Image (cartoon, rainbow, N blue to C red; front, top):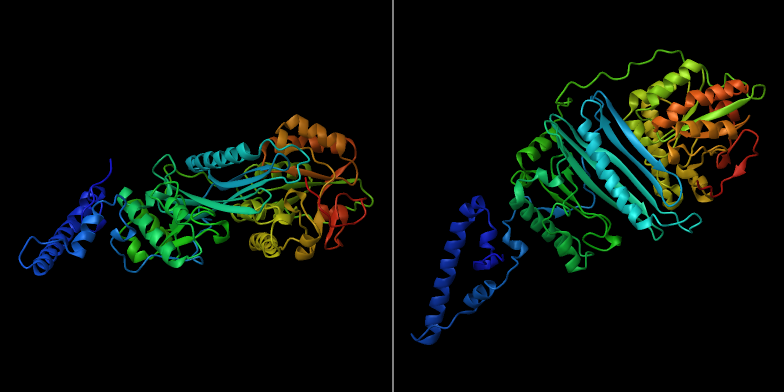
Length: 543
């Protein structure tokens, strides 16, 4: 039902009782003053006859026929909300959480490329379950658009979803899911934040940070005014109006800056053309305090002063104990004399990696792990254990993005970001690069300046998730000098490793690292698929 409109276009019925108690008397007094002025003006102009409405009174009467109140109807805030493209969300790496790990899913070829990773906490399964549902919903929507493409299509779409913790202490968890998609005409980025009160059993929308629908309406008006004032490039009024309307979907990415300011993020194309990027509106902390719910204030407090501990509904299990196995020297196997096969594992570390390391240790075998930077950051103990037990760590980019679709600067960020994450944990900077999806070209080779490690055996463990089938494919394809592609993010793959190693032993093959197989003197910008393949210049190799 349309709201009644009072003086100055204020939607009276839309005001909450709390707001009306504050604004009602002001509106009434202002209205009486305006009518008195109108009457005085009319009396002077008519010589004592029937007064005609003054211009100001006519304006006030016209305002009563306007259904949508202007943004200025929202009381002004000081300090003033404003658009700020440089404002950044506060993020945290919560290494104080026991049982923290990641889940990862990949798909390497048609109908589309897919990579997603999200956090899990053993003592709080709600987190992983809710994030998994949100990510699967996003993937299903993407597949609805691109799932009909067939092999050989000129463009293979890509969907990439990664995460950051916004808060992870006290009784609050906030996770920002960053989504990137490429469909041929260029990439598009979007994000959403999911929030958790750890005493509850479900995810909360980003708008749970706000004090109800009234606060959301105010935030929407502040955002609209700020974008209209500060972003003249948002030149489509209807798009801006629709994109800033007060709905949970429009305001699905909200968090805080390091100084406690409320930060609102809009997707590309939500409030303006794609060239406008992902606009952000900042509401300073002092002003935001008037808009936050109790949950929002607790989240803000943990941003400003993290407690360094997370309250869970039940005690978190102890983490995997540190293994004290001695580190065998890489290069201890002479693959010129011994029949070797390099086992490589992509996309981790992840929860199945721990059992994989147990299996490799029991068999005295070694492997190379091509690590995704975001997973390295949130699985520090596993990564440290990989190096401590004599395995090799390679670079698999920060967020598993197809490097050939990115600018030179973005390529550098992906490779350098992963290298820094790995080195921060292990003290060792990776010297080998496996480009996500095996996609590379001369430009990527020039920008990265690293040797590329591809593969000669792909059992498609990421597609079939069949333990017996994966083991059989490796046994039928691998031979001396092979580089085998596997993924330690899949339990079914880890389950296949004992049978793979049994087959190698029966055929006199030794599982080793890539450096053991190929030697330490690899050429930057060259790609390698096996021990006996000649060095190849970087070309587009897409799996």
